[in-house]
Each structure stands twice: as C-alpha cells, then as structure tokens.
Length: 141
Image (cartoon, rainbow, N blue to C red; front, side, top):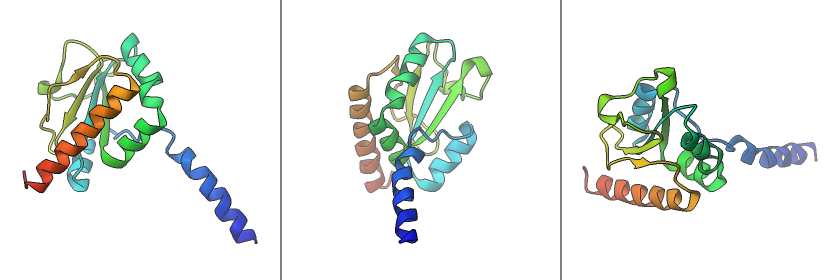
C-alpha cells in the first residue's frame, strides 16, 4: 500500500517538473547537447528590459504545450544582450526578441522570427521546424 501511495505522489509531481523550459547553460553547451541528442535548437536573443521579450517570457514561454514541445523536441538556448552573453555574430539582430531555429551544429535553418509570437503561431512554427528537421535527417543532410 505504501509503495502505491509513493508511486501516486510521484506521478502527480511529474507535471510540475516540466513546468518550465529547460534552457541550456549557455550557447556552446546547448550546441554540444543538440549535437549529441541530434535535435534542432531554439535560440532566443533577448533582453531583460525589452517589453516584447518580457511579454514572450510571460505568455508563450509559460504555455504548457510550448514547454512540452520544446523540452521534448528541441534544445533551447537564450542569450541576453544586457548580460553580455555570448552570441555568434551571425545571430546578432538589431532588435529583440529574435527567435532563431538552428541545426544541431548551430547553422540557421531560417531567418529569425522577430517579436512576441503568440502561443498558437509559435506552436505552428515549432511543428514546421520539427517536420523540416526530421525530413532533413531522413535525407541524411
């Protein structure tokens, strides 16, 4: 009986563990992890004082479906301009937030999405990127 109670408690707490995006420690470790796990990368170029970055953080990046999709199928990296985090030159943009989708080696798949993308459009973008990535992997690229 005690084992069943413990198991039930563990199962109830699992969703709490995935209640936020698992951000890589930094760009280099995120790319290394993406290469090892063979996953595409979401790279967010952001700033703590940017109202659209804050909006993105407080809405889209708090959505359970977004969190689940990112944690399952992507390696997520964020770089803050106001913390002087490392950002490759090729990924610097004049505005924030900039959301890049990268191959595991750090090469951009597309031009960045700019601004606070709403949940539904972001989920659509994640689906498109994941499908494109899977297609590229199947073709051996």
